[in-house]
Length: 490
Image 1 (cartoon, rainbow, N blue to C red):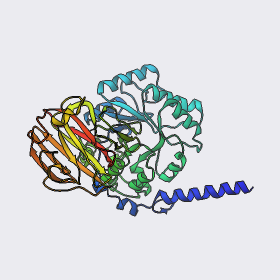
Image 2: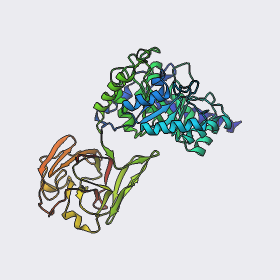
Image 3: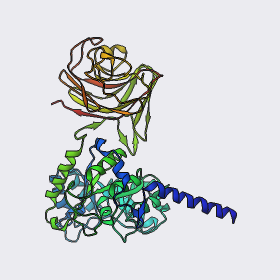
């Protein structure tokens, strides 16, 4: 009896702790609609990443699946989220998309997808019983069609069999949130169900239905951090009204910029699935969708960039990177932060050479005497220290002056000003190398604008080359993260 009482007390305090950390306060069983926590987050400083855009076929529910493919292709969208029950084609009366389709129909769909250059990545909202037979049919279909995520709203509370299927098939589950009185209308309910389960079981974050429910989407995303496996991105004309209508992104109450900033901050790399449901647009939803896509482009900082410190399956990796010389870099696979150890060496990106480019990254110094640098256009694979005489190093060293100070073209051209943040804070480098001109913006301040020429240690430099990060010594580590490149070569 005493043991049971002790366990009950522990469970009670764990629930209290969960509620305290979930959000600033609760109202009517859900998050406060416009809490202070979301307002305090410095979202204006977040450089929004480019997300893959998908189309939820329900947007074109008045059309067949094959007609939807043509409309999605015309919008320039390359990813698709299908739902069960959509008619396939006017030439195939009675045929509908779903996991009951025969192999001939599946092959036809595969061929049409390939012809349109569109990838089917998710499927739902689909229901199934809490039995291996019922689940297996949907999971087998998803595996056969190479679908990455199944979207569902389970009627049952026991997710043990669902977790077993996720592990067996390596397919993600996203628990969707329709408005009340549905089971998962509030994000805390989803979190309680999935917490402690396989990380591939998470939330399908439908921002529109949160708005209808009276839940701030940004606070909901913060609560579900690490458990978001899919996003239905919507913007509505009203907050807390069930019959609110979809509007183009940026024109409603969702605060889409903060939503994308929060997803960027969380290192969410999944798709943003567009699901435009306004009945007034049902005959032609493409115009409001295009307006919304234009807004997303306007707030996306890294539009057209490649992230060269990559991420796959929720983990960062150094694929394509090589190290020359003493020391090494440690990668935190969860956060994507590189930390230098020892030296002097060079971590260089060998997947390709760059000619004209913008290199955008963040760095942080551990001490005032931290010494490091970013190498540009390393002409050949480093096999000796000779590369330092044939490529420019953008310096990181606040303890030195002039042409050896942070932002300098090392030993060649000094920065015009000092713009670094103190040790322990992240700095932002934006480095443009076009032709012979090197421009360096440090924390939004132009500190270097120079027509490069051989000078100092640099004897000559190449028209194109590799990019590299220096680990200088064991006394003063440097950290790097969010490494993006935009190719400017015509």
